[in-house]
Amino acid sequence: MGEHETPIATVDVALFTLGEGNLCVMLARRPDNAKVFPGVFALPGGYVHVTEDDDTGACARRVLRDKAGLSAPYLEQLYTFSGKFRDPRAWSLSVAYYAVVPATELTGKSLCLAPVDDLPALPFDHNQIVTAAVRRLRGKAAYSSLPTFLLPEKFTFDELHSVYQQVIGVELNKVSFRRKIENQGIVVPIAGEKQYGAHRPAQLYRVAEDALKEFDQTL
Amino acid sequence: MGEHETPIATVDVALFTLGEGNLCVMLARRPDNAKVFPGVFALPGGYVHVTEDDDTGACARRVLRDKAGLSAPYLEQLYTFSGKFRDPRAWSLSVAYYAVVPATELTGKSLCLAPVDDLPALPFDHNQIVTAAVRRLRGKAAYSSLPTFLLPEKFTFDELHSVYQQVIGVELNKVSFRRKIENQGIVVPIAGEKQYGAHRPAQLYRVAEDALKEFDQTL
Image (cartoon, rainbow over all chains, first blue to last red; front, side, top):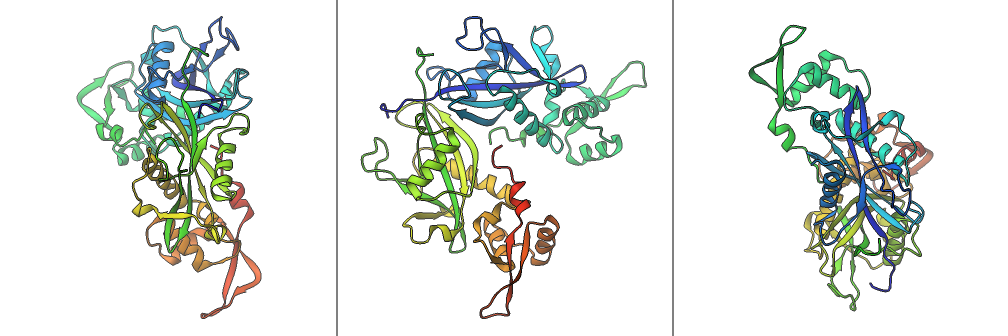
């Protein structure tokens, strides 16, 4: 210790939400005085601050608070990217996280959202981070309550179905989807609450408390 | 940069093998002149050396080479453990890996192997790392070729069955296990090779090349 040069230690966050029917990831403009890639859009990230952050998860939450003004209800460590060449400044190590928020949380904020299936070229290895995060999210989405983190508090069954389709990126047969969701007890109908509109009134649902509790964000 | 204090950056490796019918993890004695926990058994680990290591994976392979004298055929990043308090020296961050090797690779080496279900108290958060690694290994084992990394090059079906049972930690019905393994094309019989012993000659198998290729160690 002491005699060794230490790597740069950062955290990067891929924040997912839905925008115009697509799974999107949030990009943040790097400061104009940044040493590398000034003014360029990238994943929000930053150095680990040993005096402020309890751990890298706390660092990721601070980054989201500072760069997007929000606290993510779902945040999971993805993978640690590292190496000699990923950052032009020095040997660097980035603990990457991904987060999932409903689009309603972002209303009124001027954030840049890019569809994950049509991503611009990003600095560092951020394209690789997004690709890995999308794979993880889609892999977990099909058999879990994870996509419900993209929904507002109350939603119709059609909205639920649509969110799963957008996240997974394939069409899902509505009948078998309903059976699967009901078997897993992921959502519960809200007694007496319906959504009224152009169509016949639709039952409103909320996420079952147990469905969220059993979802392990830590490992 | 520069104005921030940087975390300690290390790599720790949980190396799994089978010993006397149990899934075991290798422990290494910390040097007597170590600043913290001198002479104590712990997971093999070390600082990231920015001049030597291309990335944290290379660092993990170097640690295994230096502390166990072996190159692990299977090595996967597990999770990054971090925080103010996990290391008495300073705010630290450890990229944890797990590796899987056949017991035959360890013959003749004087290594300390501890059964994962009866682990001593380890320094830092190493018990937590082992628990997480065992969970990941067992989770992946049931539906993949991962446990075959614990086998020598040639093996009987009974040996294969036994290795899966030891890794997963439960008894597996031999008939349905055979069906599953055959459906997945994980092993292939070696034409004309049989093991002779006390029982009737047993067909020898090897791992199918495709079974290992499709197994993604990187993410």
